[in-house]
Image (tube, rainbow, N blue to C red; front, side, top):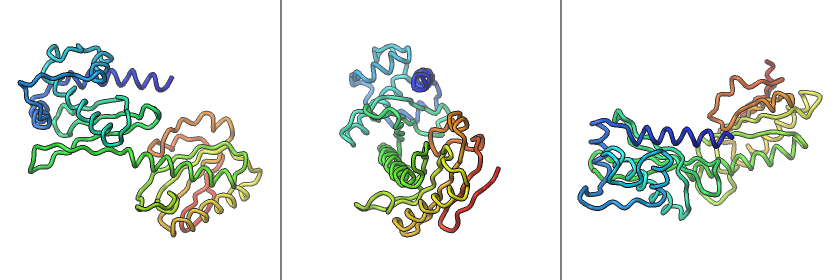
Amino acid sequence: MKRKIYFLLACITMACMLSACSAKTAKQDEEVVETKQEEEVVLSEKQKKILKEAGLPQNYDELDAMQQINIRNIGLMLDYIENKYDKEFEFYKFYADSTGLETPSLEVYPVDDSECIVTVKTVTKSDSKKVTYTDDYMELQATSEYEQAVKNCIAERFQDAEFEVFSTINSMEEGERDVLSKASAVTYVCMVDPFEKEEDALKAAEEVINYIKEKNGNKPLGIYYYMQTEEQFNQTYITSADDDFSDVEYKYRMTTNNNAARIEEK
């Protein structure tokens, strides 16, 4: 249900952005897109699908100038990310800043992982009209891998506990070592408290942080546990480490980092 709601919002956003009209943005995007106006533009099936779901004509010539620029940008961004990773992506959202202060950006997700929302951004060098693109796909993949590694570590020490893990990677070293050895990260854990005594939970949390510290050479690290009742856990609506945790209900919280491990009462 959540995905369907987001998708409908995405379509609304798409319709608004494709229809956005700003002389400044038009000028900016005309510099971004190198397609010659006299050349015939052939839309891909994906571009036609995007237009259809936005309630816009699928015939390129029936679109207004701003819509034409934006659908071309979407096509270029899709080509970039699919060619880069040799992988098919689906459209999610497109942003075209009507003020002209920000360059267009596209949100997509791999066809085999609808939860992985990837952002593609345009980068225009000041001394050139040539456009390049950047994306955060590899960063997201690393975050997913890191979260799974932390989950495995926690599961061994909080046996039979129900929990979710949300991490933000601050830095990642290159190399073939496992992700726990390469990353400096902050992790939030929402967990149904499996212990009768808080001290037992803290001991398990210390074992987790000490294990990861040993693996990563004591790189900056933090793991924050929200120890909850089952009811509190089921009523927690968090999807990533970027969400607001201030409204999360919990019995007590544990903070563990490179220097300390402690229990924080509400």
